[in-house]
Image (cartoon, rainbow, N blue to C red; front, side, top):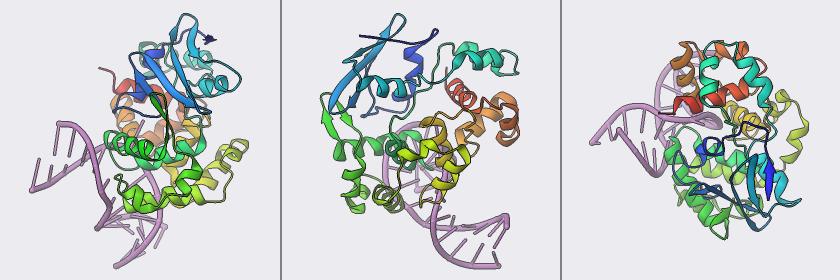
Length: 266
DNA sequence: ACCCAGGCATTGG
DNA sequence: CCAATGCATGGG
């Protein structure tokens, strides 16, 4: 069934992140089709005229797919603004129809970031794949990302056996067991979310900012500590990432995604 | 055999 | 309060 998206929308380009650094077992891309477990069922998503074809599409799967594909981003104001900006006036049209994917679940978003701290994304994807395979539930051809309950019940040694450092294993299990309403973070403003997350062991400024950007889709999220973003900003602008941030206000999040994606286009 | 990669907490000055 | 250090894996 068709889930309409505002034009333009380039599904292939937008889902590039699900395959750019190795297979993502929780967001599995196979031959132009994205597979994702939702509520114990396998959902398939593929490009279609006027939007994406989603099977099955119902009240349970629709909000997850909309979140996953970043349907909440308002691209028109961004592209109109970008047209008058240095660098972005060139970069954004080259990625016409790019809509950053989001992490539909807060726990998944945070654990994904912990696994990606410091190491290359290739290494992070490999480690995370083993984690998803071991602690997640297989639903057809895809895996449901491990639940918070399942991770809370697992041991740090088990995660270490999958390639987590002892520290990251401790952070991940600790987060799962922590008494903190992760869904409730959506009700807080940006600075409150930052303060709450940074107070959690293992979650620093970088992780908090990517949570704002990739889970909450906050327009002003700007992961200035991100190594790849620093390099992209230096490449395109010859500027320090902290200098550029305020100039992009209030479009930092989409700008960051476009710059990062553009920086790895051939 | 190195060295670096989309951080973070800990330790030592 | 800032600088230095260890961390585990994958790719070059």
